Length: 127
Image (cartoon, rainbow, N blue to C red; front, side):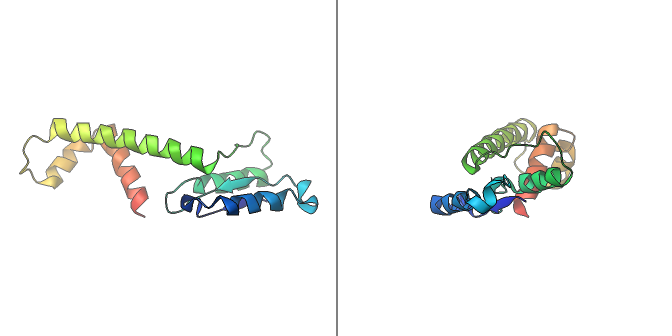
């Protein structure tokens, strides 16, 4: 069993405290239920919740330890900023004609990992 909290992007710490109180109750304490704080809106820790659950089902000994929502959100923001910076630098260095048609430019940029990474993250965030 995994307890997953959501809407952590709204920063209502009272709900997280209530979830923590729930799992330390006497009848649940021996189950050692992990809590995963998620935000579907920001795509934070959603995959971790499912990965942890699958590891529990498979009885994996060295399970992942879910990070707090704040820590994961900060790491995700840093990664998105880095990918965006790389993408912007790639565009600035390869698109010299502001009247260029996007489709041929896009085909040319597809061979660069920075563009591929940005595109995959952009598609995921728009879902």
